[in-house]
Image (cartoon, rainbow, N blue to C red; front, side, top):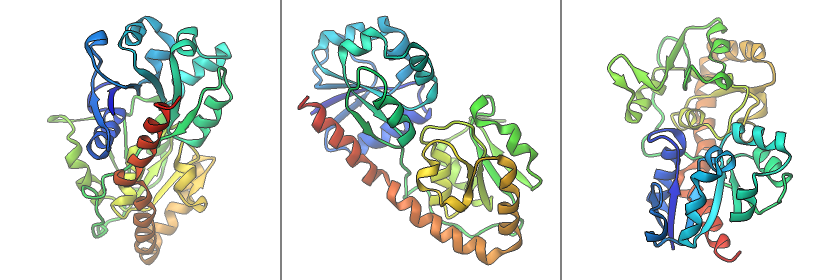
Length: 286
């Protein structure tokens, strides 16, 4: 089966996820915009929901290639607009045959929105060959990774936490940050902290867990689906006593580091790809 995957900006999370899925899928996945009628594909998977939901003109020519169209929901911006309208844009309703969502909350919202098309749960994963456990640093510190300009990430909340901190964003002093450098970042922290208001299926927490680092977080996205409940809070200030326990008890830090590595195994891209492949198989039967 030939699948054309349309994603957002190169090297952003959706692109990263689908690059791994293309690597392990039993189907032939190509990332990039279709060449319309000249393109011989069975499915077009639009993994960048906002464009399809709001700007119908951007996808009208996709229909000319006579392929099944699937819309991937990976964030809340798209659904926020959809919920204000009460349904999907007419062009989406007419041409798409299914949706994917990368966490259970987004899946429920999408299922409840007309025209009630099939919705498949397809979360992000983690590269267990790139991210591996390393010894904890001698000096305790907490870590945060992401785009500090993203208001939903609420990096200001992280900066307020009274602990030594390390942060990494999309750029460094030398230019764009390389993904291959992320294992070094996780090896230099003791606990990974997420203070987001909203998330889809964020990559850094899974990468930190695969690196043997405990994850503590606010309740957002699919973090509530795999991070143990004792490390998930509603108010970011409630993270402080949890982090203090890790700071003051190195044996707990080591023990939970092993536990989080085990939790990350379920999100190995070699496993996660099965949810995408099943979705592609079933969509062809619709």
